[in-house]
Amino acid sequence: MAVVELKVGMHCDRCIKSIKKAIKTIDDMESYQLEKETNKVTVTGNITPEEVVKALQKIGKTVTYWGED
Image (cartoon, helix red, strand yellow):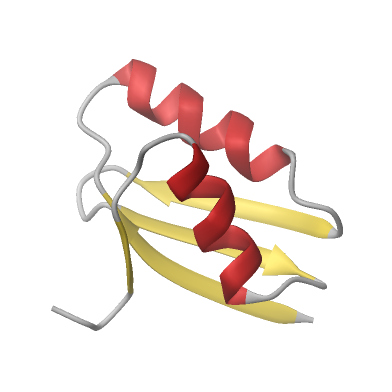
């Protein structure tokens, strides 16, 4: 089970809705958590970081790994 932590810009409810929808399309995703205040997205499951990044980039989001600035 992997835990992927990413920083993703989420400025409005529409952004958050798009991010949730994109994450839900990832195969073997077990759970996710969005923290709007810190722009942190945490996804858990039998997944790779690349899968999550690809899903979010597909909807036009800029993604960086949590802790990289």
